Image (cartoon, one colour):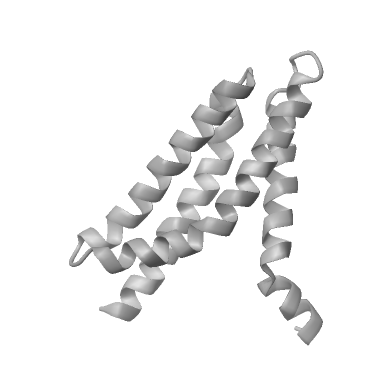
Length: 128
């Protein structure tokens, strides 16, 4: 892999932009059967939320993993991150009138929770 491609792969800006486009696009698709501008608003809201959550997720898992020991270190940080993300997503989508909240947040939650579990496991193994 070239150094430019490696730098792009490690760039927080690239990750945040990708999250915005991918999950915002998903929300637009999930709400496509509703009249405009509802799908567009849902896409912009989900894109912004995914970008912000992507930026915060790694540091949140890093901080939470220091607070737990034993087997709790394996499951508590991802669980807390998932519950916090779910709360934020449902609250903001409800406040902005997203018609298909569950469909809208299902994929982003699945992706972010999977990342949280895998990342937390990888750092927990190093600390053990």
